[in-house]
Picture 1 (cartoon, helix red, strand yellow):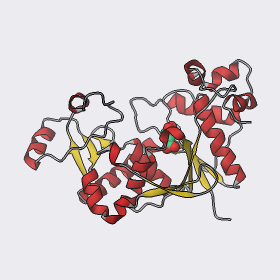
Picture 2: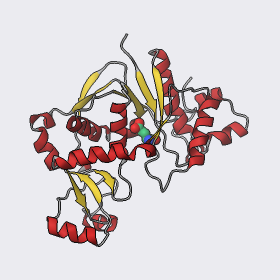
Picture 3: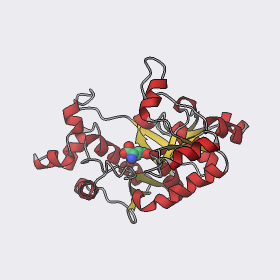
Length: 281
Ligand code: GLU
Protein backbone atom coordinates (compact mmCIF):
# COMPACT_ATOMS: atom_id res chain seq x y z
CA UNK A 1 0.00 0.00 0.00
CA UNK A 2 1.36 3.44 -0.83
CA UNK A 3 2.02 5.84 2.00
CA UNK A 4 -0.86 7.97 3.28
CA UNK A 5 0.11 11.25 4.92
CA UNK A 6 -2.46 13.81 5.93
CA UNK A 7 -2.43 16.81 8.21
CA UNK A 8 -4.46 18.90 10.60
CA UNK A 9 -3.59 22.58 10.22
CA UNK A 10 -5.40 24.89 12.63
CA UNK A 11 -4.64 28.57 13.15
CA UNK A 12 -4.16 29.53 16.81
CA UNK A 13 -6.46 32.53 16.72
CA UNK A 14 -8.78 31.15 19.37
CA UNK A 15 -9.80 27.91 21.06
CA UNK A 16 -10.70 24.92 18.91
CA UNK A 17 -14.47 24.70 18.48
CA UNK A 18 -16.83 22.05 17.14
CA UNK A 19 -16.02 22.95 13.53
CA UNK A 20 -12.36 22.17 14.19
CA UNK A 21 -13.28 18.98 16.03
CA UNK A 22 -15.35 17.91 13.03
CA UNK A 23 -12.40 18.46 10.68
CA UNK A 24 -10.01 16.74 13.06
CA UNK A 25 -12.27 13.66 13.37
CA UNK A 26 -12.44 13.40 9.57
CA UNK A 27 -8.66 13.72 9.27
CA UNK A 28 -7.86 11.12 11.93
CA UNK A 29 -10.59 8.72 10.79
CA UNK A 30 -9.17 8.78 7.25
CA UNK A 31 -5.62 8.23 8.46
CA UNK A 32 -6.66 5.34 10.69
CA UNK A 33 -8.63 3.71 7.88
CA UNK A 34 -5.59 3.95 5.59
CA UNK A 35 -3.07 3.06 8.28
CA UNK A 36 -1.46 6.41 7.54
CA UNK A 37 0.07 9.31 9.42
CA UNK A 38 -1.32 12.64 10.61
CA UNK A 39 0.95 15.67 10.83
CA UNK A 40 0.07 18.63 13.00
CA UNK A 41 0.81 22.04 11.54
CA UNK A 42 0.22 25.31 13.33
CA UNK A 43 -0.76 27.92 10.75
CA UNK A 44 0.25 31.04 12.66
CA UNK A 45 1.52 33.28 9.88
CA UNK A 46 -0.82 36.09 10.86
CA UNK A 47 1.10 37.17 13.93
CA UNK A 48 -1.38 39.90 14.74
CA UNK A 49 -4.16 37.36 15.39
CA UNK A 50 -2.31 34.24 16.61
CA UNK A 51 -1.36 33.73 20.24
CA UNK A 52 0.98 31.15 21.85
CA UNK A 53 -1.59 30.30 24.53
CA UNK A 54 -4.03 29.21 21.82
CA UNK A 55 -1.35 27.01 20.30
CA UNK A 56 -0.79 25.30 23.67
CA UNK A 57 -4.56 24.91 24.02
CA UNK A 58 -4.80 23.24 20.58
CA UNK A 59 -2.31 20.55 21.60
CA UNK A 60 -4.09 20.02 24.89
CA UNK A 61 -7.55 19.83 23.29
CA UNK A 62 -6.39 17.35 20.63
CA UNK A 63 -4.88 15.13 23.31
CA UNK A 64 -8.12 15.28 25.24
CA UNK A 65 -9.98 14.21 22.09
CA UNK A 66 -7.60 11.24 21.87
CA UNK A 67 -6.08 12.49 18.61
CA UNK A 68 -2.35 12.00 18.55
CA UNK A 69 -0.15 13.26 15.73
CA UNK A 70 3.01 11.84 14.18
CA UNK A 71 6.40 13.53 14.34
CA UNK A 72 7.19 17.07 15.41
CA UNK A 73 4.68 19.91 15.15
CA UNK A 74 5.50 22.36 12.34
CA UNK A 75 4.95 25.97 13.31
CA UNK A 76 4.74 28.17 10.23
CA UNK A 77 6.06 31.31 11.92
CA UNK A 78 9.39 29.49 12.35
CA UNK A 79 9.73 29.23 8.57
CA UNK A 80 9.10 32.68 7.13
CA UNK A 81 12.41 32.45 5.22
CA UNK A 82 11.14 29.45 3.26
CA UNK A 83 7.99 31.27 2.17
CA UNK A 84 9.96 34.38 1.29
CA UNK A 85 12.26 32.27 -0.89
CA UNK A 86 9.21 31.00 -2.80
CA UNK A 87 8.00 34.56 -3.40
CA UNK A 88 11.49 35.50 -4.60
CA UNK A 89 11.47 32.57 -7.00
CA UNK A 90 8.09 33.65 -8.42
CA UNK A 91 9.25 37.28 -8.58
CA UNK A 92 12.34 36.34 -10.56
CA UNK A 93 10.02 34.70 -13.07
CA UNK A 94 7.86 37.82 -13.34
CA UNK A 95 4.86 36.13 -11.72
CA UNK A 96 4.53 38.29 -8.64
CA UNK A 97 4.28 42.07 -8.30
CA UNK A 98 4.02 44.64 -5.55
CA UNK A 99 0.53 46.06 -5.17
CA UNK A 100 0.35 49.27 -3.14
CA UNK A 101 -3.41 49.61 -3.18
CA UNK A 102 -4.88 49.87 0.27
CA UNK A 103 -7.86 47.77 1.27
CA UNK A 104 -9.96 50.91 1.10
CA UNK A 105 -8.79 51.68 -2.47
CA UNK A 106 -9.55 48.13 -3.52
CA UNK A 107 -13.00 48.32 -1.95
CA UNK A 108 -13.63 51.57 -3.84
CA UNK A 109 -12.63 49.93 -7.16
CA UNK A 110 -15.01 47.01 -6.66
CA UNK A 111 -18.08 46.71 -8.83
CA UNK A 112 -21.32 47.63 -7.03
CA UNK A 113 -22.65 44.78 -4.91
CA UNK A 114 -19.39 42.78 -4.90
CA UNK A 115 -18.09 41.45 -1.58
CA UNK A 116 -14.48 42.31 -0.75
CA UNK A 117 -13.53 38.74 0.18
CA UNK A 118 -15.06 37.29 -2.97
CA UNK A 119 -14.02 39.85 -5.51
CA UNK A 120 -10.95 38.83 -7.50
CA UNK A 121 -8.82 41.94 -7.80
CA UNK A 122 -6.45 42.06 -10.75
CA UNK A 123 -3.80 44.73 -11.15
CA UNK A 124 -0.43 45.29 -12.66
CA UNK A 125 3.03 46.27 -11.45
CA UNK A 126 3.81 49.99 -11.20
CA UNK A 127 6.63 51.48 -13.27
CA UNK A 128 9.96 50.98 -11.45
CA UNK A 129 10.42 54.70 -10.68
CA UNK A 130 6.97 54.96 -9.08
CA UNK A 131 7.59 51.80 -7.09
CA UNK A 132 10.90 53.16 -5.79
CA UNK A 133 9.24 56.37 -4.66
CA UNK A 134 6.59 54.49 -2.73
CA UNK A 135 9.12 52.12 -1.18
CA UNK A 136 11.25 55.09 -0.12
CA UNK A 137 8.16 56.57 1.56
CA UNK A 138 7.76 53.26 3.45
CA UNK A 139 4.35 52.51 1.94
CA UNK A 140 2.81 49.13 2.69
CA UNK A 141 2.30 46.68 -0.16
CA UNK A 142 1.10 43.17 -0.93
CA UNK A 143 2.88 40.65 -3.12
CA UNK A 144 0.25 39.54 -5.62
CA UNK A 145 0.42 36.62 -8.00
CA UNK A 146 -0.34 37.93 -11.47
CA UNK A 147 -3.01 35.72 -12.96
CA UNK A 148 -2.21 37.01 -16.46
CA UNK A 149 1.51 36.24 -16.07
CA UNK A 150 0.73 32.83 -14.57
CA UNK A 151 -1.51 32.01 -17.51
CA UNK A 152 1.24 32.98 -19.95
CA UNK A 153 3.86 31.01 -18.04
CA UNK A 154 1.77 27.84 -17.97
CA UNK A 155 0.51 28.06 -21.56
CA UNK A 156 -1.76 25.09 -22.35
CA UNK A 157 -1.20 23.71 -18.84
CA UNK A 158 -3.32 26.57 -17.50
CA UNK A 159 -6.46 25.24 -19.17
CA UNK A 160 -5.74 21.78 -17.79
CA UNK A 161 -5.37 22.85 -14.16
CA UNK A 162 -7.19 20.54 -11.80
CA UNK A 163 -6.85 18.13 -8.93
CA UNK A 164 -8.10 14.76 -7.76
CA UNK A 165 -11.22 14.96 -5.61
CA UNK A 166 -11.86 11.83 -3.59
CA UNK A 167 -14.63 13.17 -1.36
CA UNK A 168 -17.11 10.44 -2.22
CA UNK A 169 -14.58 7.63 -2.12
CA UNK A 170 -13.95 7.44 -5.86
CA UNK A 171 -11.06 9.51 -7.17
CA UNK A 172 -12.08 11.81 -9.99
CA UNK A 173 -10.26 14.66 -11.64
CA UNK A 174 -11.96 18.02 -11.37
CA UNK A 175 -11.06 21.20 -13.23
CA UNK A 176 -9.62 24.11 -11.27
CA UNK A 177 -10.57 27.69 -12.06
CA UNK A 178 -8.44 30.20 -10.19
CA UNK A 179 -9.68 33.17 -12.28
CA UNK A 180 -12.49 34.30 -9.92
CA UNK A 181 -9.87 34.85 -7.21
CA UNK A 182 -7.93 37.33 -9.36
CA UNK A 183 -4.38 38.22 -8.37
CA UNK A 184 -4.21 36.55 -4.96
CA UNK A 185 -2.03 37.96 -2.21
CA UNK A 186 0.96 35.71 -1.49
CA UNK A 187 2.58 37.90 1.13
CA UNK A 188 2.71 41.41 2.50
CA UNK A 189 5.47 43.77 3.43
CA UNK A 190 4.94 42.99 7.10
CA UNK A 191 3.84 39.30 6.75
CA UNK A 192 5.99 37.45 4.24
CA UNK A 193 3.43 34.73 3.51
CA UNK A 194 -0.28 34.28 2.96
CA UNK A 195 -2.32 31.21 3.85
CA UNK A 196 -2.34 30.00 0.21
CA UNK A 197 1.41 30.14 -0.13
CA UNK A 198 2.37 28.71 3.26
CA UNK A 199 -0.24 25.95 3.04
CA UNK A 200 0.79 24.70 -0.43
CA UNK A 201 4.48 25.09 0.33
CA UNK A 202 4.15 22.99 3.47
CA UNK A 203 1.90 20.33 1.97
CA UNK A 204 4.62 19.79 -0.65
CA UNK A 205 7.54 19.98 1.77
CA UNK A 206 5.93 17.65 4.29
CA UNK A 207 4.99 15.04 1.70
CA UNK A 208 1.25 15.34 2.37
CA UNK A 209 -0.52 12.86 0.10
CA UNK A 210 -4.11 13.59 1.20
CA UNK A 211 -5.61 16.91 2.23
CA UNK A 212 -8.86 16.50 4.14
CA UNK A 213 -10.61 19.83 4.60
CA UNK A 214 -14.06 21.35 4.89
CA UNK A 215 -16.32 22.03 1.94
CA UNK A 216 -15.77 25.74 2.63
CA UNK A 217 -12.22 25.50 1.23
CA UNK A 218 -13.18 23.63 -1.93
CA UNK A 219 -13.25 26.71 -4.18
CA UNK A 220 -9.90 27.97 -2.93
CA UNK A 221 -8.32 24.68 -3.88
CA UNK A 222 -8.26 26.07 -7.43
CA UNK A 223 -5.75 28.68 -6.30
CA UNK A 224 -3.70 25.93 -4.72
CA UNK A 225 -3.70 23.95 -7.97
CA UNK A 226 -2.34 27.03 -9.74
CA UNK A 227 0.47 27.49 -7.22
CA UNK A 228 1.34 23.80 -7.35
CA UNK A 229 1.62 23.95 -11.13
CA UNK A 230 3.76 27.10 -11.07
CA UNK A 231 6.11 25.69 -8.43
CA UNK A 232 6.10 22.11 -9.74
CA UNK A 233 5.02 20.94 -6.31
CA UNK A 234 3.58 17.45 -5.97
CA UNK A 235 -0.18 17.61 -5.68
CA UNK A 236 -2.04 15.85 -2.88
CA UNK A 237 -5.41 14.18 -3.37
CA UNK A 238 -8.27 16.21 -1.85
CA UNK A 239 -11.27 15.16 0.22
CA UNK A 240 -13.81 17.75 1.28
CA UNK A 241 -15.93 16.93 4.28
CA UNK A 242 -19.38 18.37 4.93
CA UNK A 243 -19.50 21.23 7.37
CA UNK A 244 -20.73 20.53 10.82
CA UNK A 245 -24.39 19.87 11.42
CA UNK A 246 -26.22 19.51 14.68
CA UNK A 247 -27.60 16.11 15.79
CA UNK A 248 -30.89 17.10 14.10
CA UNK A 249 -29.10 17.40 10.74
CA UNK A 250 -29.47 21.19 10.72
CA UNK A 251 -26.71 23.77 10.70
CA UNK A 252 -25.46 24.43 14.21
CA UNK A 253 -26.42 27.67 15.83
CA UNK A 254 -23.69 30.30 15.92
CA UNK A 255 -23.36 29.90 19.66
CA UNK A 256 -22.86 26.14 19.59
CA UNK A 257 -20.54 26.38 16.59
CA UNK A 258 -18.27 28.97 18.16
CA UNK A 259 -18.08 27.58 21.62
CA UNK A 260 -14.64 26.29 22.57
CA UNK A 261 -14.21 22.53 23.04
CA UNK A 262 -12.93 23.16 26.54
CA UNK A 263 -16.21 24.79 27.48
CA UNK A 264 -18.04 21.60 26.44
CA UNK A 265 -15.44 19.53 28.29
CA UNK A 266 -15.86 21.57 31.48
CA UNK A 267 -19.59 21.02 31.20
CA UNK A 268 -19.00 17.25 31.33
CA UNK A 269 -19.20 16.32 27.64
CA UNK A 270 -16.92 13.48 26.52
CA UNK A 271 -14.98 13.25 23.23
CA UNK A 272 -17.61 10.72 22.07
CA UNK A 273 -20.37 13.23 22.81
CA UNK A 274 -18.52 15.76 20.66
CA UNK A 275 -18.23 13.23 17.84
CA UNK A 276 -21.95 12.81 17.90
CA UNK A 277 -22.45 16.57 18.06
CA UNK A 278 -20.40 16.99 14.88
CA UNK A 279 -22.71 14.56 13.12
CA UNK A 280 -20.27 11.63 13.16
CA UNK A 281 -21.11 8.37 14.79
N1 GLU B 1 -5.41 26.87 8.64
C1 GLU B 1 -6.50 26.52 7.76
C2 GLU B 1 -7.79 26.50 8.57
O1 GLU B 1 -7.75 26.38 9.78
C3 GLU B 1 -6.19 25.17 7.12
C4 GLU B 1 -7.20 24.71 6.14
C5 GLU B 1 -6.63 23.76 5.09
O2 GLU B 1 -5.74 24.15 4.35
O3 GLU B 1 -7.03 22.61 5.03
O4 GLU B 1 -8.86 26.67 8.02
